[in-house]
Picture 1 (spheres, helix red, strand yellow):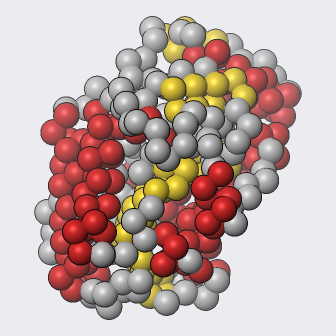
Picture 2: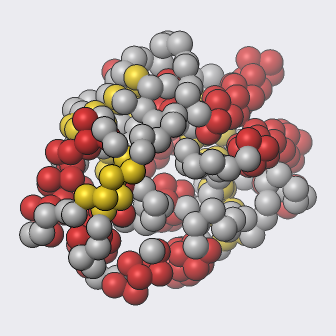
Length: 317
């Protein structure tokens, strides 16, 4: 199948594009390579995708003509978004999450007849306590969560209005190689390997998280290819059912690296989630989803990846 992956130069999108190509699909990436974090990290990922036969179109979903990019695609995985809880202008989240999704959806509906349009949302739509199933009332606490929820509803409205084959996934606390450099584990691993202080938000050690290895998220996304009819109009949580505290995750990485972290306290972060624990009963039932990577296994793979790339550690600081 011909598959378009938006946000392909990013974290989850790059792993998904690689997996789809390895399965024999014709995969095209799309990314605007914004400067939210160092563009050279994304350029590196684009080169790695190209080496695996995945070209990346450099287009801005919120501004550019998308007809050529979407024409003839069988499946779209939409991961491009403005992430993060940082103090960006609200208009940035609206542009890159809501307007971008609207324009992509419109282009696909005009120029393609896909079997599946898979939107990738976030567990942040649930708010501070993300522990319910897909029927739980969303209560986002950040502009990111609000605009991702709105984008998700745009996609599902196309299903409700005209039977457009759309679905949405809500990943939980994803980590692994290529994760954004400002996130917990990349910051922690760099700090330990380079003997630097670890900036940590006050109280965050007590936060509970369904930390989910990126390969387990990709498993769920790829499973939808085999069941597009069952996915249409649906929302699926993707993540591990077992939650651990941020403090426990830090201790695992300390053990793997063999060095204690030197904590540098920061004020609590507005909009942060206090607890996430993925309820994946629906994904298990419909998709056969069964994430199996333990935190120690996934974090060991992530630490090993960073150890192999000291130049990337420095560039990401």
